[in-house]
Length: 124
Image 1 (cartoon, rainbow, N blue to C red):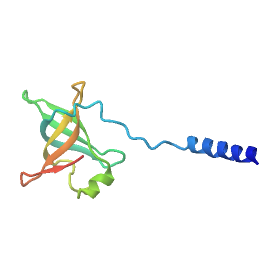
Image 2 (image 1 turned 135 degrees about the horizontal axis):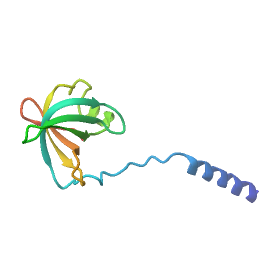
Image 3 (image 1 turned 30 degrees about the horizontal axis):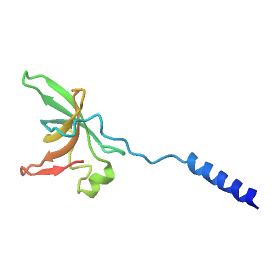
Image 4 (image 1 turned 90 degrees about the vertical axis):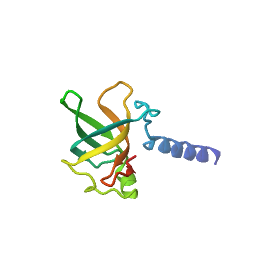
């Protein structure tokens, strides 16, 4: 009887270990203690899980248009916060604040998007 219970426990434990883990990655590649502000034209927006993405064309001081990749929250989180797929569309001009990448590349973790009335709405 003890052998049967031990075998059953071992099999159950093995099956549990074989299930995929539901872990979340960190945002260690961003400088979360710093904010940068950007303004540009939305090139693409991808509403997807686990994170949404906005690709923004930003004109620098030299007049050169540079593409930025902006990581946002999951679709579920965005919907819960009142965002819809039509809230931001390609061609829209937006202003935002985000956490820059540690390596200085043109990417950041979205925090806030400025709305038409001047208010900021959370996007993370």
